[in-house]
Image (cartoon, rainbow, N blue to C red; front, side, top):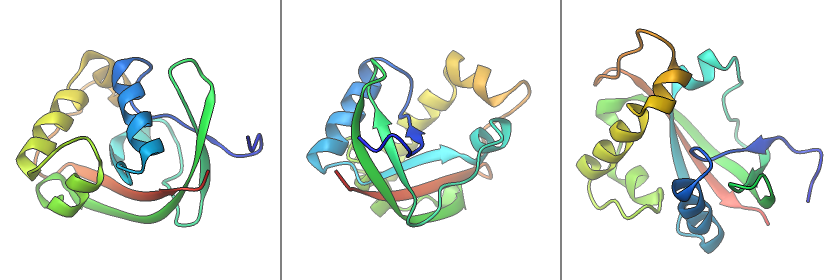
Length: 135
């Protein structure tokens, strides 16, 4: 499956990743959110419209190819309901989306990724990516 494409990982290996991949493969999940800080500390380029990546599962197996269709960067306080719904995780309100993401972004594993001293607040910049399942 497209060996030349970059690898795309959702969450950390485990049950959450498995649920997200299931939602991607079923077509329920067509969007994702990341903190801009994740790209900055990882020295990674932001997603770009038209770029493709290979999604891997918790075992590192290549399971899907997605193509980015839109990218926006907004303060946490401005994430729209449409994006929360498109994440396909069962959120029905922005408040639910926010609570779920704050829990993940505040986890010990993410705190280690984000770096010492990073604090999440209403002004924290969030990368909103929309994508489609390419295969």
